[in-house]
View (tube, rainbow, N blue to C red):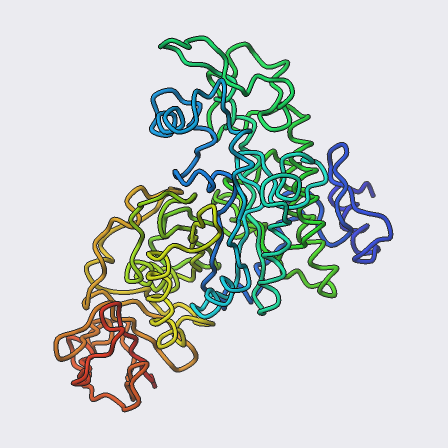
Length: 523
């Protein structure tokens, strides 16, 4: 009988121990990965399952922080400072000079983290209810936030704060029992940074190249030798059009990050990049975890592309967007209280806005990863502290209905359920954070055993009415007890055709402006 290649691989897998003495090798040149249950192929990774701890954690905090934060002028500064006419180009011209003379390379040393206290920050994040924490690993600016083996000059140990930022964050998180993650945005860098090789098209310095063309700094700005003459003008920021040598460098650097810090979670800014290169890194992440946990894979890779995650492989992530219904598998929204990189004077999301997002996401089987951007100093500013304290106060009363919860029959009810937030593969919602706050008619549901939690996102006048629990509703269950989290006495209620009517206490709790949680015992 002639065996197919797939049959041969199955027989080989069955006869081979989980961890061979020599490393596994992906199906591409020079892509060695750790031995373990996965190879760097889609068919192999289809056998992956999201670990149960993630579906119980629900809430994580992210430090999207690096040299671009030192300028304190918002997102994508390292790219936009080379885009004539952009706000950041104008700011750069006014503050530092023309980018042909003063470039991003000259700004990187400003990143000092002079008052950064990771242990203090992590204590605040734990108190606020975070169960996992993410450090920036490397952004599109090509600067590694760890003691990089391959990016030897432009990393956080060699220049800037002279500290292994990733390693220090990791130690602070794990010391407090948090799962630890890293984000990588490197796969887009080759295209994203092409603006540094252009020049003004008008004005007194028209045609004078920006400093990205200097050969001495190709390790930061990239070497585009061999690319078409118009590449730097036509490259799309998130295009991922890159030569094999860059894909190999991408693989080497992210593998180095994984090898040094062995994170529980790895986030990539987009879908799985560069096919076998990206798939091999996913397999490497999982194999490292399996080796560490006695054969059990406890790690998670996040992709923003739904098709990547349809068959095992990874967890779906939505940037600034929310799914419009309950998902079969745990997923994640990543968003920010302000901009991704710190910008002075920006208006932050309120604690109310964050909790509205959290309960909506959790009711749909998702998790919220929330970025608090740090300025150059490494300290939260007073307005960020206000938002964080509001989240903390609410979570300390109501988080019982968040952690380790599961979706109910429907995710919620009320006017907000008529608004589709993100659907049909949409990865980014430009109106996220701008929608009206949820109110007392907007309710989200979670369950634990025989307990149903109804998050009422405003203070009801006299009584809360849960229409989905009316005796005439197709979703109705018999309610035999009602409490409100943070209130010791049971609440009076009646279950009628039009809904469950729960009488509110005469004293309005402090957290009611954000929302309350009804704890309902169902038969």
